[in-house]
Image (cartoon, rainbow, N blue to C red; front, top):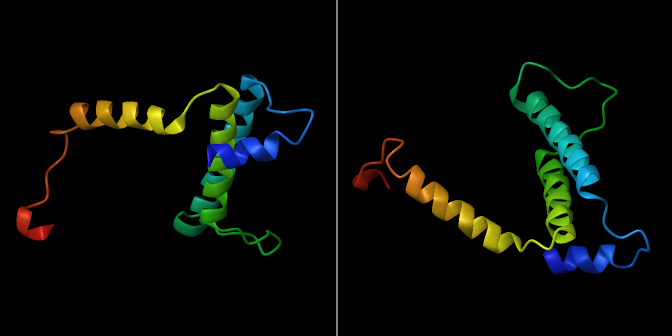
Length: 104
């Protein structure tokens, strides 16, 4: 995915946005995702005039911007994910109630 995004962005002279702009874009996309989640699961129904969007579409947009951010900083997302998961697995291994073996 990171290579596909890099191939796309690499076609343009402007290239990647600055880290500050990327942060703003992430925030914007997260807001759009939050709005859709609120429409589907919250107390704020969509207006008749609002375009129908899917949560899947908004997650995809957020993911694209996250990938462009990582690429612009030379961060390999699979390595970043492995670091995070290792930390979370150790830190949170006893945080919640485990499912019974027969319920798995």
